[in-house]
Length: 79
Image 1 (cartoon, rainbow, N blue to C red):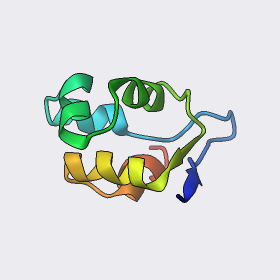
Image 2 (cartoon, rainbow, N blue to C red):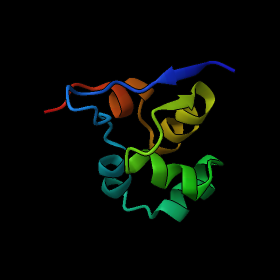
Image 3 (cartoon, rainbow, N blue to C red):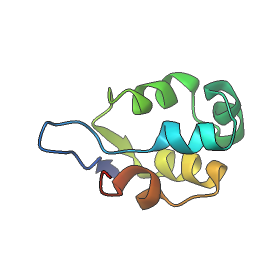
């Protein structure tokens, strides 16, 4: 499996909008876990910047479940 290093800001914080898109779809972490097939713990860790690298298929499953692309959620410039 390919692993991707999540883009980081100068301070080292991962620039991802996972929580934003999950809440936008009114999903709990458990709902997203069920819909994506990714564990709730992994989703929580991604949202809280506790995972610096993740498998491509994990990010793809989450993005697909949210109807977005991996770059939109995990690699978009911080606004």
